[in-house]
Structure formats: structure tokens, C-alpha cells
Amino acid sequence: MKAANNNNKCPICKEAATEKYHPFCSARCSEIDLGRWFKESYVIAGEKTSKSQSEEDDFDQ
Ligand SMILES: [Zn+2]
Image (tube, rainbow, N blue to C red; front, side):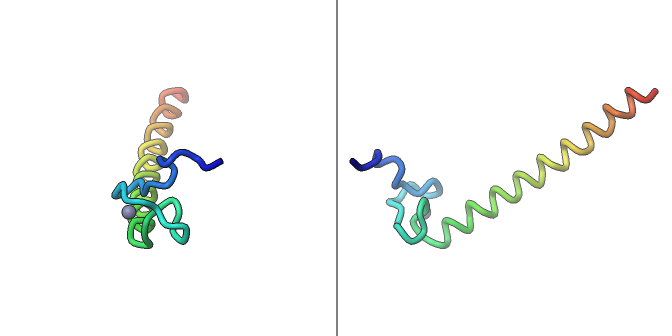
């Protein structure tokens, strides 16, 4: 049995994914997703750090 066709679609451009770059259709889309993920996690980490720091400051006082 094969999985749903949805699993074979590139999440970036919605084209059919290729076996080589699964779940993406090409190296380019794979890199786009990687860059996006890295950028997002970097921003979230920065926000979390400054937030928890100010919360800790409030607790200390
Ligand atoms: Zn793609």
C-alpha cells in the first residue's frame, strides 16, 4: 500500500517530490526549507531568551 499523494508533494512549491530530495522536489527547495527553518528557530530562540531573562529579573526583585 502506498501512502497518500500528499506525502509526495514538495512543501515549498507543491510540485511532486522526488525520491532523491524527498520530501522536496529539488535541492533548491530543500535549501529554501532549511534556510527558513534556521531563520525561524533563530528568531524564536532570541525572543525566548530575552523574555525568560526579563521574567527572571522580575522574580528576583
Ligand atoms: Zn519544490
